[in-house]
Each structure stands twice: as C-alpha cells, then as structure tokens.
Length: 426
Image (cartoon, rainbow, N blue to C red; front, side):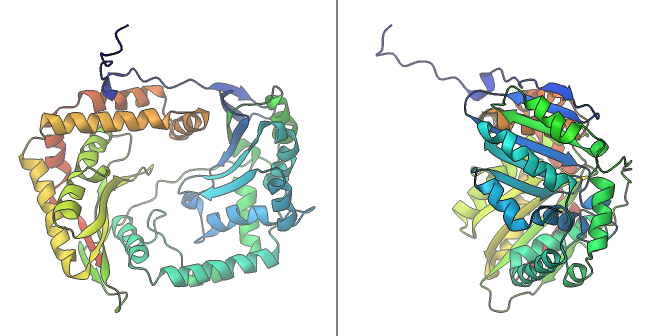
C-alpha cells in the first residue's frame, strides 16, 4: 500500500443506503411491538403511541392537557414520587402531543428496564388527574402564553397556521386563556378513557434490549385489555383557508425586528410531487447553504437566518418560509424571497449546485440512520402513516436522479408568488 496516495473521495450519492428492518411481535392482548435491536450501548428507548392528538379533540387543548397530566399522579403515587422513582435510575419519561398522535417515551439503561416498566405502566393505566395538578398546569400555561404573545415570532406562527388551514381546524387551532380556563378534570378523564386504550396502542422499542423484553411487555401491557376497547374514527375535517393573502400585524411597538412568514398549502406526503419538493425546498431554503440564506443573509444582511420547510402533516402539508428581520427591511426581505422563487421558475439549477444538494441530503439521511433510536423513528413515521420501506427507497431514488428540468417544472407549479400567504408581525 502506497500511503503517499490518498484514497479516492466518494460522494454520498454513491453510497448504497439500506433501512435496517424491524422485528415485529404481538402481545397477548394484540398490541403490536416493533423492535430494532442494537448492542452498541446499554440503553434502550420504549415509545408508546396512541391516536390521541389534537385531531381528535372536541374541546381546545384537551389532548395536550390529558397527555401532560397523566404523569402528574396515580391512585398510588403523586407526581413527585413518580418523577423521583424515574430520576433515581437516571431515566427519562417524556410525553408529547402532535396533531394525530400522542406518545409516552421511556429512555433508560437496559439493566433498569424491569424496575421502570411498572412505573410506566402505572402512568399509562392509572392516571387520576389530580385537581391541584390541573390548576397548576392551567396557571403555568397561561403565564407562558402571556409571555409568548409578546414575541412576534410566536404570534406569527399562530396566525400563519390559521390563514393556511382555518382557525377551527386542528392544524390551525391555537391556545387561549379561555381555553385553559375551560379545562376540567372530567373532560380530561373522558378523553383519556376513549383514546388511551390497549387496542389503540402501538409500541416501538430500540436499543440493547434485555433477553426477556417481550415477556416484560406482556406482563405490564399485554396481559389484559386495559381501559377497554375503543374504536377511533379519523374524520376528514374541512380546511377553511383565509380569503385574504396579505397581512400586517402590529404586536410590539418597542420591537426592533419583525417576523416574516410566507406560506402556501401543499399536497401531503402521499402525493408524487412531495419528495420532489423536498429536493427543491432544500435548494431554495432548506439548509444553511440555500439560496435564501446566500441572498438574504450573506449578501443583503437583512437577517441572521432564513429557512423554508415542508410541513409533514397527514391531511395536507404546507410550504413555509420564515425569518425575523429588521423592521425597516421586512418588505425588502419578502421581495427577495419572491425573486428567488422566480429565479427557480425561469432558470434551470446548475448541475454543480444540484450535486451539492444531493450529497447534503443523502449525507443527512445517513446521519439520521446512525443508531437504533434513529432507525426506529424512521420506521415509526412510516408505520403510523401506513407506508412501507418502498416509500423510503423511492425518496432516495428521487434525490439521486431528479433533474434540473424536473425541479424547474415543480417550481413553476408550486412557487408562484400569487399563491402564497404573506404575513409580517412587528
């Protein structure tokens, strides 16, 4: 071997990317368990997913409050005792609410699994929603909301979603003081009993699992039909976007910058143009070397950062450009965004720029597949959206093979400035 000759540089697009398969088990009561094993570290992640997101609310903020307060007390232990029993073992039990789903996720050392699963079982199967904890929750959330409403970027995020989807749609619904005041213990209990049931549960596990992992899951979650059986029907709710498309809101008279949002509805991930737009959006404003950053940050100096993103919502998605800029240059920033859209429509993307973005996107995917925790998250997103590995590999293929002409066609179809909602909050 001649060590004076460096090895050949290999572009990321030349790598053969494969998605490690999962193992599937079924608990005695029918709960599906998806597993990705890894022996790299003595840790594991266990996530329980329920169709209990904001989509299924019949009262504003019901889903998030239910999910949060499940951990604040059971018939046997207080919130303090639950948290101490988890933290004693250096573990973390997190909860999240999204539009369609709600989750509880346990991160712990493998050797402590058998001690922590009973705690997680108690939180999931036996919450009592203490009145005192509910009052504390409402007070804290109202204080946070009062503070956040003074921030232009927070206000802009709320309004742009309302313009795109409608204020009564789950994607456009926002929190309010009155909504928090209206939360009652009985409302949370009713939502919990309907949505957090054994037949609506899916479990995703990754990491270095104990040999008896499935037996442990069966013991604590698979041995009974806990909370009974409930059939959840996902309604196709109507989207009611705003009729006007340009908005200017004055929120902070002493502020020195404004929040800019430029957005339009876009087909969801099941549409064939969605993966193509992921590539185009990366070029446009999806990473630090994007055209929006090069123009508006580097050349014009209007902002510290500007990005565009595709929402991954199930019913419909959206393309959203967002930034905070000086008050005196907000309108100029919007004009430059539209110029970049028109440039993508009228001039084919140079091959060198396209190759750079291909390598960036493939490299990012490689990083996202580094480890069992990341792999199970990829599988979770596919499974919960009724997709399989073919969707993953099709997206990879589009990144590697899409041409400048195809991207220009997508830009002409979806990047006309007249189709975008435009908002400035100052």
